[in-house]
Every structure is written in C-alpha cells, then in structure tokens.
Length: 311
Image (cartoon, rainbow, N blue to C red; front, top):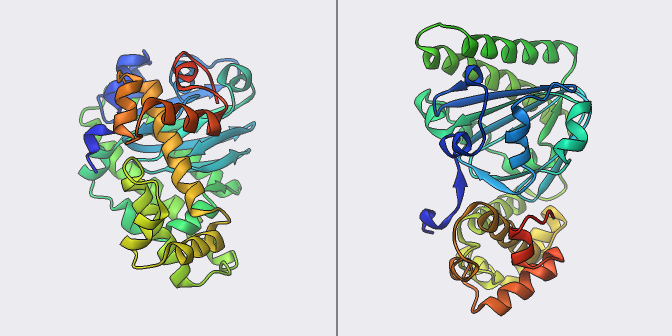
C-alpha cells in the first residue's frame, strides 16, 4: 500500500500545531508531558489533539498515577486507572476518549512521545520483543504494584530532569534510559502473561487471525471484501470469518469496516484533502457511497465530522 496516502502525525507536525514547553522537548526525537491536578499547562494543547483519531509515527507511553482515563488505540479501548501504564507502538491510531477539559484536572499523568527514528537509532527491536500481539491486545494496560510504580515514576522523573538540564548529548543519555525502561515494563508484562490462562483458541487460529489483522492494517484502504483476505491466507471466506470470530469475538467484516472508519476520521481531521480526494484514497466508488458508509458507522456525515464533530 502506498504509505504516502496515509495521514500520519509525527513530532515535527505536533510541534507546529501545539506550542509546548521547551524543556520537555528534545528536537524531533521526544516529547515528555505531564498533568498534575489543575496545573495542566501546555500539555493540554497536545492532549486535546488526541480527542480525535490520530496516527502517530512513533511510540506513545502513558503513565497514570492518579484518576482514570480512557484511551482508544486502533479498535481497542483501554481504561487507565491509578498506577497504570500503556505503551502504544508506531502506526496505531490513538484517541483520548475522555474529554481533556472535563477530566485532566482530576488526574496525575505522565506521557511520552518518542519518534520511530529515535527508537531505531538505539537499535531496540520492539516488534521482535512483543511477538504475541493478540495477547497484548487482550491486556494492553498494566497496573503496577508499589515497587514497579516507584521504578516507573523514577524513570519519568529522571527523563524530565535530563530534558530540563544543560547536559550535552541528551539523546545519548535518553536512549539507554528509554531502553532500560521498556525492558523493565516488558518484564512486568511477561510475568502477567504467564499468570493469565491461555486463550481457548488454538495457536493456529491465533496465528491466522494475527496475519488477517496485519493484512487489514495494510490493505483496508483498497480492499473491504473478506474474500481478498481469505485468498491471501489460502482460506475460504467462510472459514476465515469463523476463525476471526472465534479468536476476537468480532466478525471479519466488522474489523475491516472499523479500520476504514478510523482511516476516514484521521484523513478528515488531519489532512488537507477534499472529501472527494478522501473518497479516492479509500477507494469508494463515489461520494454518495462514502457518505452513507461513514454515517452508518458514526451517525455523522463526513462534513459534520470535519467541522469539529466528536464521535
């Protein structure tokens, strides 16, 4: 699929849209934000962007110390509670479900945005480490115990101190620090997985479902028929649908349509493309069909959503 068609937000674009506190920014490599009760500061501007679906070309880390916050990424919803943490990998479409103006005064939150290039530069193979993606989707949020919470908090405080300092070579300091933090979280997550009963679906069902979702992620703009994905997996459409339903509880067409809706929201909110151009990007036959599809899934027209509607 032509990646140029996808509307992706990176740190450079974020900095052009939302003025942030300088000492919490490291060039185009990293942004560290925080909210502490009523003292939301400039972080509000960035978090308000997340009220709408946005694909971020990097890693997002949310660490909630107090309060509750709901975050949607791709087609999964995660409710962060006290002492909880969420890591979102590049390419996911993220949305902050809770309205910042209503909820941020009740939470203490750290969040970090790290560019894909920065992570690549420290040679950390995130995808290789987290191979069992379906199980991550089942339990993407971690609630930390007292010791783990203290460690995570210290990592964020040290990262903030580095960003605020006059220390040279900050990237060389933050790289190993970030790697160490993720390995710490990986250890916590691995322990939780081992303590969680294996899903009832077989390893083959999980593998095929993962491959199906990977294909949907890649081709949903062009292909909305189950037959296309079944053919790629050398399965019949009926059998593929049965496997996906068994593994996820959702039908294959529902997964495909949901990805298309997310893509449409992202393009409507963050691209300069006309609706006619978006219809072409998403390979709908005409604007009328796209309008009916979008409204059926969101109860709002594309035009209304572009003008500021929130769904």
